[in-house]
Image 1 (cartoon, rainbow, N blue to C red):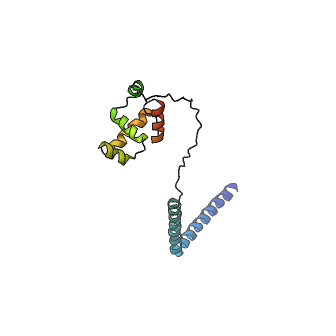
Image 2 (image 1 turned 135 degrees about the vertical axis):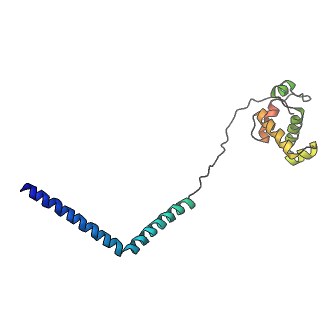
Image 3 (image 1 turned 180 degrees about the horizontal axis):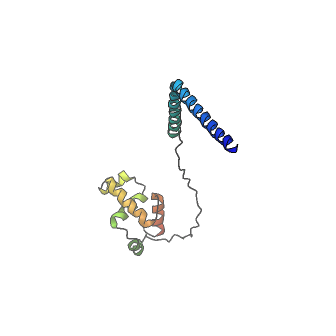
Length: 156
């Protein structure tokens, strides 16, 4: 009895599965155009969403904000008399005579083009010497380089 029930149950399940497969095949054959249209629409929708996100993504911008830092500078009392350049400090920093000329003209307020015309060199040469001066004086800007040179006794 048990065996008969199990046999009929398995055969009934197999028959139901076969009917569902046949129904599915007829459904796919009858509505194949709609199914393919739906798949294509889904693919285009996914492609559109991906492209939309890719093209309208906001670019990351890095904002650098300079914050003024108060540095205490020791007060120096100006000494009356002619200016005497600190040669030891000049040699210690390794500043060449041409770099010193450019530093002096920078302190006078001349632009890169004006310095190049005065010293009969190209603007790129002036920029190269200026970059080397910045490195030797640990400066980031012209005004900072001139200030450090004055503190070192290189400029009056």
